[in-house]
Amino acid sequence: MKNTFGSSVSVTVFGESHGAAIGAVLDGMAPGIAVDEDLIRHQMKLRQSIGALSTARREADEVRIVSGVFEGRTTGTPITFIIENQDTRSIDYGELAYKARPGHADFSAQMKYHGFQDFRGGGHFSGRITAGVVAAGAVAISALHGKGIRIGTHILSCGGIYDRPFGDINDDIEKLGDMEFAVLDSAKAEAMQAAITAAKEDGDSVGGRLETVVTGLPAGVGEPWFDSLESVLAHALFGIPAVKGVEFGAGFAAADMLGSQCNDCFGIADGAPVSATNNNGGILGGISTGLPVLFRTAIKPTPSIYKEQQTIDMNTMENTTLQIKGRHDPAIVHRARVVADSITALVLCDQLALRFGTDWLKA
Image 1 (cartoon, helix red, strand yellow):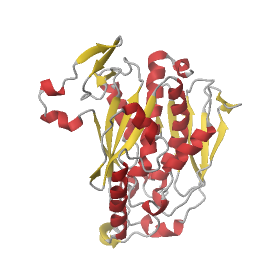
Image 2 (image 1 turned 180 degrees about the vertical axis):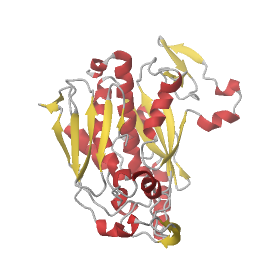
Image 3 (image 1 turned 30 degrees about the horizontal axis):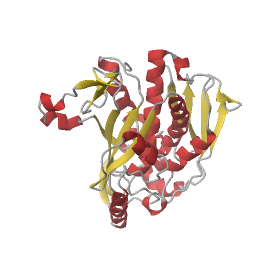
């Protein structure tokens, strides 16, 4: 399995949903970066389940750093984060050893690993594995903050309810920082949560869209062609379970524009290039322009639903039915928000280290 992402600064994930522990290894981070354990705890809390809107599985998500940090700062060697699994209930998954859950990786994992995969709770394919990404991402976010780079993500839509887009970006990023249910228009949060609750009561689930913005990223970061900034970000974002689409700037809407509408015309203000529009999402030719990097991520509905569904018996290769048991999220878009922030931070640290050298990340 390919579980490592990044060239100069890389992250490796490990573990299974119902195994002893999960975690991540962050390698290549510059020495001397302050490791804010309060920020790590804060970020982990944002990923945790929220009352009736999420799974009843309640993990403490206490992060143990066992290498790469000394006296509160990175040493430059691999940083290992370990998070123990404490609230597992594997008995709920016995039937899934041979019945493929629709929308899950059960069937494709069976085809690749021939039945040797850990199927409990989705095993290594579970969204649970993102906890290690969030722990590592908190260190990356601290490094970026030291260089004046900020990342913010809000729930653009959930269950067909839409939040407002980013306005005053810096104020919006600040506003989102402490939100467990990250929307910019507080009136829309109640409607989104009602849609999640309605789906849950019907034994179903809902999906949504996340919108992410990055400010303070210098111009000139990224490569043309196959390692474009969009390519690398999209590659990593598609590693988040349930992500089914990524678009930058105007995205697919650009296909319906005229060139005169889509082009971001440049000007100079206070000695720096500016633009009244950002239809290209702050990236041209695969390289950052200095404008805010803006992208949206589509999160599909949680595949674990309580309705009876058609499936197959993977042992007999016969048709059968399945009604899932256990504890599952009726929506994960609100929990995926901090994962998107974390993935973005890790990618940007890697790209900046490739552009300016690893030690550039130390403020």
